[in-house]
Image (tube, rainbow, N blue to C red):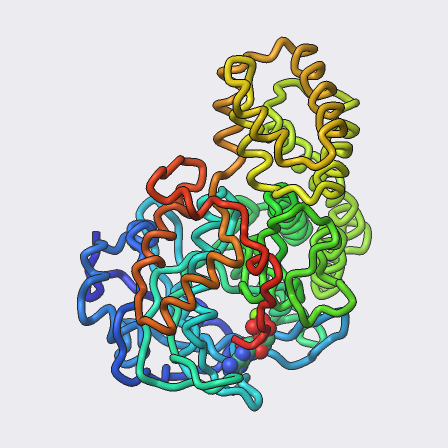
Length: 489
Ligand code: AMP
Ligand code: MG
C-alpha cells in the first residue's frame, strides 16, 4: 500500500500528441477541508486508506499542491448534445492529474473535478458546487455496489471558495477515478477536424491501455468497436434493469470503456414509470428512461462514424448490428435473476412484460416491489401480504402472482435458492433522489457531512440488510417524488 508521496504516479496521456489536451495547473480552493473520503476506492488504486486522513490529501486534491509526477491536463473533445453536434467541448472544469498502475487491479486515472478554468471552460467558472459533487460521488459508489460499470469517487474536498449558481454555494472538488476518461466525443472531435492520424493514435492508446487482448488482432479497430458496442449494451441493460436514468446521454458523456460516466441530473426511479424523465431540462424526453437503449445505439453510430477512417463500412455495420441482441440477452438474463428463474423460457418475455405493465399501472415502487418479492416464498406468507397491500388493484396483482407461481412450479423452483438469488440481484438500497437531497440539505445548512459516510457504506453494499439504516430503503414521501433536479452543477 502506497502513501501519497510514494504512489507511483505517471501520465501517459500527456505523452501523446499535444493536439489531444492542454496543460493546465489546478486553481486551488480557499481553506480546503475534507468532506468525505472513500477507503474502498483508495484500496482499489493501491493507496493506504490512512492517506485519506492526512493533510496532504486535502492539499493535493483541493488543487493546492501537485502530486509528484502529475502532469495535470484538460482533455479536448466534442460531442452530440441532444442530437446536435457541438464542435468544441473539453474538460471545462476537470483535470486529468495522471494515472496509477496497480499490481493486480489495472491502471486508474485520477481526475480532479472543479479545479478551475481551462481553455475549454467557455464562459463558465471551472468550478463544481458541493451539491453536485455529493450526487456524483454517492451515485458512482451506488452504481459500483450494484455491479454496474462506472467511474468511482475517491473523495470530496470542501472549501471557503464561493461558487455562484442560482445562489452562492460552497465550491468543492471531486476526485474521480476511472480506467479511462476517453469519451465517444474525444474521437468525434478529431474525426470532424480532419485528423485521422489523431483518431488512430487515440484508438491505439485506448486499445493498449484498456483492451490489450486486441492489440495483436489483424482487425483490431473493428474488434475495438465491437468491444465498445458490447460494453455499452451491457451497461444500458443494467441501467434498465435497476431503474436508472442517466439524464444527459450526450456523446461527450459516453465512456469509451462503457462506464456510467459524468453524472448530472440522473435519477433512480421510485414508482415504475417507463417514461420517466429525470432531467427537467429535457423537455422532449430525448433521454427518458425507456429511450436509453435506443440512444445507446444512436451514440454508438456517432462513434462508429468517427472511427470510419479506421474501419471499413461492412465491419461497422456488423458491429452495430449486434447491439440490440446483446442488450436484450443481458436484460433478459438479469430479469431471470430478478424473478429467481433458473431456466430460459419463451413465455418469460410475457411474464416480465405483464409485470412491468402492472407496476406502471399501479404506480408501484420499483425497487421495493422486487425486494419484497424476493422475500416471498411459501413459508413466509406475511411478505406476500405486505406486497399485495401495495396494490390498489389486488385482483390484477393476484392474477400476475398466479402466473408467476405457475412459472416457478414449471421449473420446480427451490424457494431457498431462489430467495438467495433474488436478494443478491434486487437491491434494498438505491440512491433515491429525495435521500440525496436530504444529505445535501444537511451538508449545506448544518455543515453536517456524517450521512455521506453512512450512505457510502450502504450503497456500496446495497444487497445487504443494514437494519440500522432501513429508513434509507423506505418508499419516498410525496414531496420526495416531485423534486426537480437543477441542471446547474
Ligand atoms: P456536462 O453537461 O456537465 O457534461 O458539461 C458539458 C460541458 O460543459 C463540458 O465540456 C464541461 O466541462 C463544461 N462545463 C460544465 N460546467 C462547467 C463549469 N462550471 N465550468 C466550466 N466548464 C463547465
Ligand atoms: Mg460531461
